[in-house]
Image 1 (tube, rainbow, N blue to C red):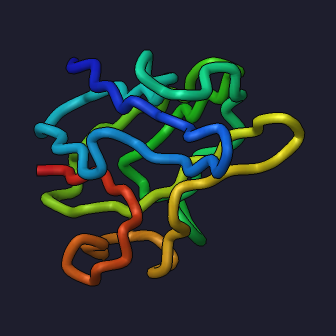
Image 2: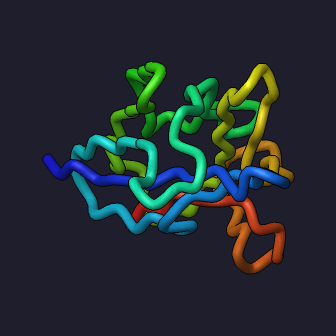
Length: 125
């Protein structure tokens, strides 16, 4: 089992934008745990995680979504073949909601990089 990390950043303070790194997370075959956490270099550190969403339906390879104030984790069995999965993550900061670009395809196997939408994605290999 691999533990994979996505760093989440919010900033700058005068016009906050939520970003993730890497924007495309490559995932090897097998059981994996993916964790989204606050990037130590984020200009704003005290935001709270709110949601992780894949669009209309969560793909069947993802399970056990856990959302805490300081991180989000999900299990990825990566057993249904090579596919990219768009997602968006949202956080709360000073009673305002900030999110990465929305999932335009409704979830599933769509490649946001090819479509130029800019949504982050998990790419199961």
